Each structure stands twice: as structure tokens, then as C-alpha cells.
Length: 289
Length: 346
Image (cartoon, rainbow over all chains, first blue to last red):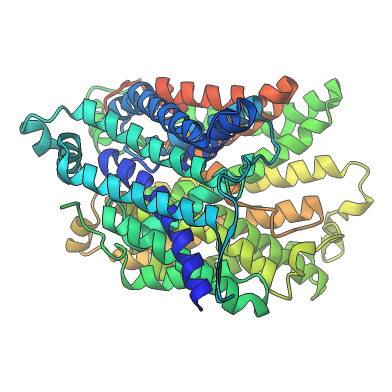
């Protein structure tokens, strides 16, 4: 039982971090970022290149991933999304653009890093063992703690910094924020960069444990969508709740339902449908604030 | 040339709705006729002349995918972004495959049955999820494709990951001893037969779609697309309308899936995945959401373009996605907005 809860918390911390980036982009721009999973994979590959191929310490890889993805996110927002949103008759057109970017990133990853499964050596050795009731490798604990620390930093940033306040205002009401003197273009760009950076950071964290490969992008996006649906789109607390709930459900499902075969995700999906039928806006689905 | 008193009417139509003229003008009829000639005469002649028999498979796929895309387009017509058409294609394919192999039914009977079953599933699923809007609906339909795949893996009747293979080809059909359709397995050139069949289905689908859009139902759908509360307040039964449209859309998806299975003679849980669902949506967006024939053009451009780009080998995906992004930047309202005479009025 302790093992299941620990696994769930560990998974949930990472999931929440992925969902945070997606929900941030969604709330600021009303864009459903299909490329989020690909950004995550990209971040993982950058850490792999820095750590395994250049032989740098892990922390350098982590920073490299964050910086690269943030720059990429800023450029994508500035030159692609902004243009399309301005010219398009429908907001939904950004979906096609996001999907196109997802394909594009897939192609770039394939050309730059190849299709093989990649990983980096363990950053910490050893296994935490509490009387065989709870067994957890130290590196997983470290990654889990790092993920939680990042979530806390992100919340503090959104809550107390000037940029964070501006972004929350933007998410609440774009026009009103603009009238109050918020530079909408600038903070949209920062927000997108921040969201992409979070995806890159999760990739960098997870490459040390599960490794990374080209095919992980799409399924990761689907999972991130589910978390947002559980918690409510565009809500920070909702994304965190959704991430931890999904992580816990996965952890519990894998141990409880294992005797019935591989149906954990089927059960999760089915219960999600029922849940959304009762509460379409998710757990905390309302504007930020 | 429109007379002077007709012009304001056309203008008003353009402002309120993307589809301008509902009357069948001679010019439009000519265009449709030309399209039919190209599909049924020019393409087979061209392929026979050049010997590129592989184009048949590509074009058959285009025809079938555009049927599915037509369904996605119809759901968009009520203001919902549907990224779950792959689920219905999978369901339709499995229904057809199971009925043929287990119950021994003829393919021609299973084709409509697959569509009807999908429509039924769509009603059951649609009743709760059609209450969702915007990205929520989009996301839940995206998840639906995953659900369909996992269900196919888990159910005993679908034979799990091994799938259903060696499904017999469509058999002969005759009425009162007059053979209407020959047995596909005896044909020397089944590729051509499948192409003609798929093209016929495609033409029928778009005929139905065009008819729906220009009927009372189409007008009601447009009212839903613009403002559901307002539509409901003037007495439109929005719940019923949503489910009906979604069922029709899924019917198309089921038919397309069943046809694919007949061609491939096999189906696996991974025959239609999330990627396919997303592609169906992309076809609609690229062609233009305001135009009935948008999904058709979008499917043709994207699928055929992808096929032609295979010459670029490892750069295939890069060029494909790059041109998709570029196209989006230049024509964010779809390729067909190029022919929009009023240019940027909407």
C-alpha cells in the first residue's frame, strides 16, 4: 500500500509539471498545444546530448533543456501563433498549426537525434528500502523532489512576480489586462516560453529514469490533455490536482487491475467520460483567480 | 452574371453564412460534372496510360479518408471540434470484420450496418459528451480514439492485438439473377474496382453532406455554430440536433472504416490511432472549414502530398510539416479561402 502511494506521488509530480505547462499556454492564448509532448521529448534529448555525449554534469543538461525550450517556445509564439491568430477567422485554426508544429518537431527530433531509445546514467545510486514495505531508488526520490520543488517555484512565480501577475491578469480577461497597461504581446510570449520550458524540464528530469524516445511525444500529449480535463483547463491548481490524480489512478490501477490484463487505462478513460458527463468543466474549471 | 436586384441577396448570404448560393447554378452543375468525369474517367485512363498502378491505392485512401473527414466537418458545422473520428473508423471496421468472419454476412450488408452501429454508439456517447464545448469536446474525443483502441485490445470478440485477418473480399451481388456487382476476388483488377467503389461512396457522401448543409437542418446547424443559447431560446431543439449531427458524422466514419477493412482484408487495434483522428481534423482545417468541399480538397492535398513526398525519404516529414505550417501562415482559413471572391470579408 505504501509502495502504491509513493509511486503515485512520484508519477503525479511529473504529470503535474507537464500539465502545468499545457494549462499555462491554454489559459493565456486559448491554444491547445498539441506539440507539448514533442517539446517534452525534445527537452529529454537535449539533456541526453549534453550529459551523455558532451560529458557535462546533469545540472548543466537540465539548464540547457530549459533554455533551449524556452527560446523555442518564444520563437514559436512570436512568429507562428501570433501571425495565425491575427490572420485567421477562427480561433480553432491554431489547432492545425499546433499539430503541424508537433509533426515538425517530430521530424527535427528524428533528424537530429535518431529514433533510438536514449537514456543517461543514473545521477544517484542506491535504493531506499523501508523494511521491504516501501522500495524506491534514490534517483526517483530525487527527481520527485525536484519536480515538486519546481511546481512550488512556478506557483510562487505566478503568485508574486510582476510577470506572473500580468499573466494571471491576461488569463482572466485579455482586453481588461490590455486596458490596464499590460503588454499583451510580450507576456503571451513569456507565457508560451514558460510553458515550453516546463515541458523541457520534465523531459530533462525523466530522461534520467525512463529514458526517452521519439514515439513518446503523442501519448504524453494525450495524458496531459486528460490531466487538464480532470482538473479543469486553464487553472493552475486544477492542473496540479489532475496530474496527481492521474498519477495515483495509474499507480493504483496497475497494481489492483493487473490480474485482469492491461485494462488500467481503459478504466481510467471510462471513468473520465462518466466524470465529465457529470462535471463538464473539470474539478476546478473556472477562470483563474 | 447576377442581375442588380439579386446582388444584395447574395451579399447578405455571404455575410451571414460561408456558403453563399444555395441554388444550383448551371456553372456549379458543370463543375460537379467535370469533377465526376475526372474521378471516374480521367483518373483510370491516366493510370492505365502511365502504368502507375500504385496511385490507385493512394487515391482510394484519399476517397475513403475524405468520407471520414466529411463527418468531422459536419461536427464542426455545429461548432464542435471532433478529433475522434478514428474511433468510429475503428468501430466500423471491427463491426464489418466481425460480421463477415463470425456471422458470415455479405460485405455489402455489413457496410451500412457498420455505419448504423457507429451512429448508435455516437448517440450513446454523444448524449453526455456533446454537452462539452470548445477544447473540452476536442480533448474528450481525442481520448475516445484511445478508448476504442484499448477496448479492441481488451475484448475477446476482437481477438486482441492479433486482430482479425484474412477477411474475404466483397462478394457478388445480383438482383433477380442480374449481376450488379461482380465478386471482387474473381476480378483481374480489384484495385480498380475498389477505387471505383470508394469514389462512388465519396461522391454519395458529399452529395448527402451538400444536401444537409443546404437544408433546414443545415441552417439550424449554423445557428448552433454561432450561438447555442440563442438558438435554444428561439425554440431550436439543440440537444437533439447535436446528437443527430454527431450520429451522421460517425456514420460516415464507420463506413470509411469498414471500406478500409475490406481493402486491407485485416484489422488490428492499431489500424486507427490518435494520429489518424488528428489527421482527419487536419484535412478539414486545411481545406477550409467554411466550405463543403474543403475536407475533400484537404484530404487530397495532405494525403497525396505525403505520398509524393516519400521521394524525399528522411526529409519527408520535415518538408510535409514545414509546408503545412507555411500554408497555415499564408492561408489560415483553409486553401479554399483562396477562391473567396470577397477576399478577407469574414
